[in-house]
Length: 266
Image (tube, rainbow, N blue to C red; front, side):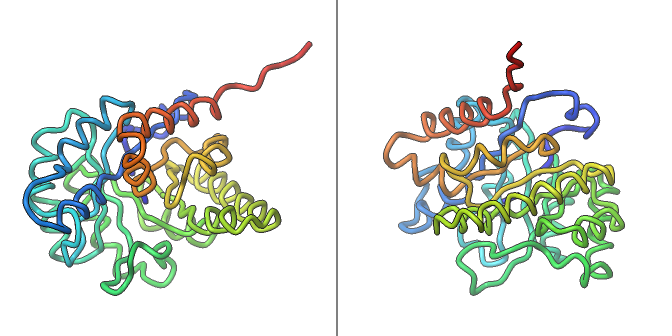
C-alpha cells in the first residue's frame, strides 16, 4: 500500500524511471510472532535499498501488530532514502508523525478486525475529518498522500483536500488477476488508468499499490502517469524462497522492463 519519494510531480513526469517503495511491515510481523529482535525491519530496509528500492514504507498501526514505535525511530534515524509512514488519521498517529517528520505520510483506512488494508479511504464522505490532518502534516513539511480507490470522485476529493499525492488501490485488479477473469482484469485496469490520468491532470502525483506480484506488476507499471509503486507483502513472502534482495531485484527489473519506451519499427 501506498507514498511520495520525489519532491515534485513535474520532475517525475519527465522521467521513465518508476520508483519502487518497499513496505517492510511483514518483516516485523515475523519478528513479532516470536518476540525478540529477529528479523530486524531496519536491516530489511537497508537491504531493500541496496537491491534497488527508492524508498521505504512502514505502516504504524494503532494495535502495533507489526511495525513498532521504536522501528519508526530507527528508520528515520538510519535511512538514507525517503521514509513513507502509512498511518490512520488519528491524533495519536499525527503526533508521532510530527515528532519524527518522515519524508511523507500516506493516510490509510484502518480497522482493528481487518487482516490488511481492505480498500481506499472514503475521502468523499470524510473530507471534514481528514482536512486538519492533511493541513497539519503539510504545515510540518511532510508530503501527504491519500490511499484511495481508483475513481474520479476520490481523486477530485483528494485534490480539494490539498494532498500532494494519491496512491491508487490496486487490490481489486490483483484479485481479478488471481481469479483469472479477463473481463475483470480489463475493467479494473481501465479504472486505474482513468484515475491516474485524472489525478495527474489535477496536479496530483500518482502512486499505486496493494497486492502487486511478479505476474501483475507490469500492466500497472506501464501506466505513464504512475510514478511510484509500493509493494511489500509479496516481496517479504517471496524472500522465503529466493531471499529479499533477489526478490526486490526481480521486481525492479520487471518494472524497468515495463517502462521501456516502445520501439518504433520503420
